[in-house]
Image 1 (tube, rainbow, N blue to C red):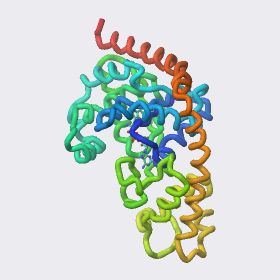
Image 2 (image 1 turned 45 degrees about the vertical axis):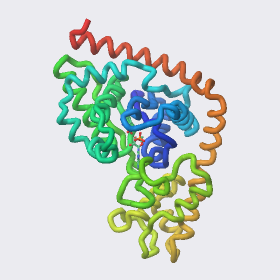
Image 3 (image 1 turned 30 degrees about the vertical axis):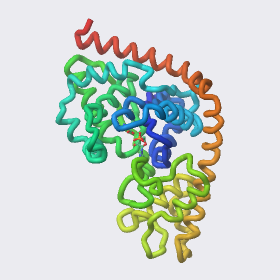
Image 4 (image 1 turned 60 degrees about the horizontal axis):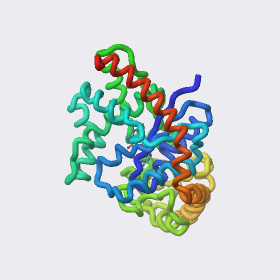
Amino acid sequence: MPKIVFSGIQPTGSLHIGNYFGALKNWLEFQKQGDLCYFCVVDLHAITIDYDPKQFQDKILDTIATYIACGINPEKSIIFIQSKIKEHSELAWLLNSITPVSELERMTQYKDKKIQHAKNINAGLLDYPVLMAADVLLYNTNTIPVGYDQKQHVELARTIANKFNAKFGQTFTIPEHFIPEVGAKIMSLLEPTKKMSKSHNPKSYISLSDSKQDIEKKIMSAVTDSDNKIFFDPEKKPAISNLLSIYHLATGWTLQQIQDKYKDSTSYAQFKKDLANELVKLLKPIQDKKQELLKDKTKLLEILQASTNKAQEQAKKTMEKVKQKMGLI
Ligand code: AMP
Ligand code: TRP
């Protein structure tokens, strides 16, 4: 039985290899399997932190182009912009009425963002996971492929769905997360015990749009330990283990094969040089395709029209059912 798959990424700037290996790369597998996939650009989530409205349209288009350049095919998968379908906001409001504030206040991402964005702790920041629950519940989603940091939000979406079903009668499918075994948490190149994040120093992440020179510079200056031995041990060697995971994900080689290749190395230099090359090889075709797509922005938006119509139809159906169950006219 094909599954219904839903995932999204915020258009907050160029995506990094954490987003690629943690999320996008796995989306491709579901698309390949013939599942019914919804891949959304979650612009309404992105406005919960400070942003520049003048640049926002370009960031949204950039994210759409990145999805397609990475292999998401608009003829097979449904690609759309969240704010184009008003049912996302509408369902979020209804779900608000059954979501305890205390559940929202204990979300790790909210606690982190409260510190990071201390001057802009808006209600949307707290309500963020309810909108995310609305995203997935509108489409009867079975599977949500995300990185590890979103696990808690998916659990909350399940809690909200169960609560709604218990209170108003069976309505929502209870979704499950899909978190990859390797790649669910790609670490910062500068602080290997923290996750790679767009909001940190650009030297700490490889953006999907980084040039060959940038990739080489960033990998060569990635923090490592000083024993010059290349083996996988996230506890004792978090930095090298992170680079090994990235190497594995970029090439498809097993960790053992990579460790064997460098077993006689007396420094990390060759390993890092090869890893940078592999990343350039992986990202160059994606960058070229994305540039091509961004040449004609009108056409890029037109490509989404059929997808948006399909999503709209399903969202409307779910909302009618939800309103009826809740006793609205
Ligand atoms: P965001 O950029 O927060 O919208 O994240 C988009 C997707 O990338 C989500 O599924 C995240 O879980 C995933 N993701 C973000 N950062 C990382 C990371 N460092 N490692 C693995 N996955 C990540
Ligand atoms: N909250 C997710 C993130 O920060 C993005 C997101 C919004 C999402 N809605 C979603 C992911 C629905 C999966 C499903 O990465």
